[in-house]
Image (tube, rainbow, N blue to C red):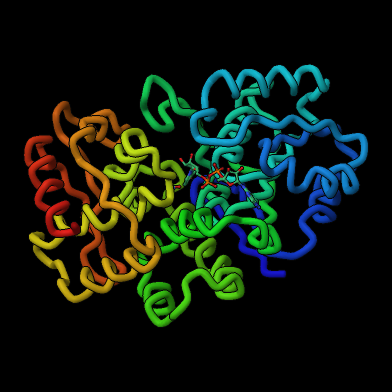
Length: 348
Ligand code: NAD
Ligand code: GLY
């Protein structure tokens, strides 16, 4: 078992991320004698329902419909209703088993219920293990904007078991690689490891690099838990990714890979940009994508609604520059749109 501790700069609080086998017995142990409700989604329940009931007899289970389109206030309030129905109180715990969608909705419900109760995150996708379960961001989509309504709410514990990868379709591994490639763009040691690896989809390789990804993200979050400065680096590729996600029907992680490819084009003209590094980053993102049609850019006005923006008609981008280096950039929308069209021609 590998344990990463996520310390918090501005408080004495910290929590543990355990990278380990036997997630269900670890979860049972973490819940202890407390009243609990387990929140998951329909796909995870179909795959792991028996294991859940075997490990946690008597613990009520609530499953949302799987999918980003259900990451809504309606799902959030349905979960809160189940939590109330199960009689949870401040001494209780919400166990959250699933990918980033379940993690974001479950974390937000835990932050709201009785003004906040503990939650334990058991991420079951590669993306959730390397990224979304760590760092305390929770949210639902609202009014056509990704993650518009949310809160920072730290989990009590995260249990990341690579055994869950065995049931993930290749597309979901690709989604996880989206955030892993993003971390690689920001961390020179991880970038070297990724570019040296032939088969990015090899499960043993992925299990091995999960702790490195968590440790990288934890180090960023520990220094800037509420995204006032440094943590903005983790938005690399994400402004365009979020707009693609709403316009293309692709999944979050796939859109992050496309976001990295499109936004790298903007980086090339910045002072300090390392062209050779950007070529290698693009090659890595393309290997992770494994082909696929280049998304169209006509519906990307949604990028203007991104919460990272601070001025009307301007978009904010976190751009890769050189190994371990990034730049924050604000662009008028017209310039951004023209840049996306040029980038698309180059990528096609
Ligand atoms: P997801 O939760 O939709 O999971 C992807 C699919 O895999 C779903 O159909 C799910 O049912 C299924 N699944 C989950 N575990 C499985 C398993 N072990 N075997 C087989 N199928 C399984 O999506 P995701 O890619 O995990 O997460 C994307 C979401 O995470 C987005 O909403 C994104 O905004 C959010 N996110 C949040 C943060 C954060 O910091 N909070 C960071 C990155 C992404
Ligand atoms: N996924 C970006 C962050 O947690 O800040």
